[in-house]
Length: 183
Image 1 (cartoon, rainbow, N blue to C red):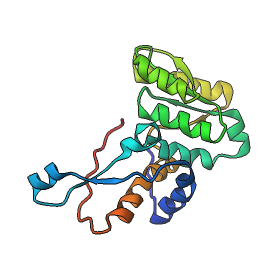
Image 2: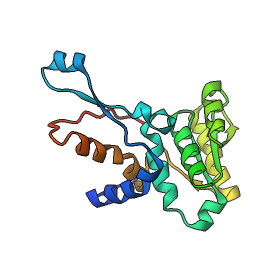
Image 3: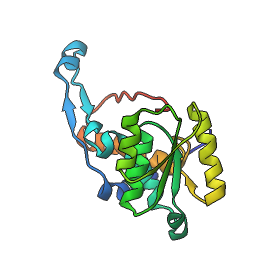
């Protein structure tokens, strides 16, 4: 993983690029979690975001920063999850060709959703690592820009715009709990 240092300014600049293309999703109060914890608990409802998750934010920020030449060549990622759909949606918003490599055992609904957002899906291998290897080969063959699922400061700054919305909508928050993982 790349060593990264991002500042509040990076996230604010990302918000300026991302906001016109995404929804400012609501914060919903959870009565059951609030009762169980004794604290007011709010949930950031990214299920209402384009594609059903926050994963459209990062690719939108990344593609916004590509040169015209890079955009003309297209973008590529490897994912059978929300990242694939986020890249497809972001690319479509900018009129950029998107290629998504998935393992051959990807669920038909994820393939259909990704294609429905305009991406070309390439099925390769039995696991994500093999699909990712094919994506990196296509980067070399076609000159596509690789949209890493987590290890790119442009992507991270875009995904992080959700945090700015939380601070705007719930400025008194004492704790923000964020699940982490590669997916």
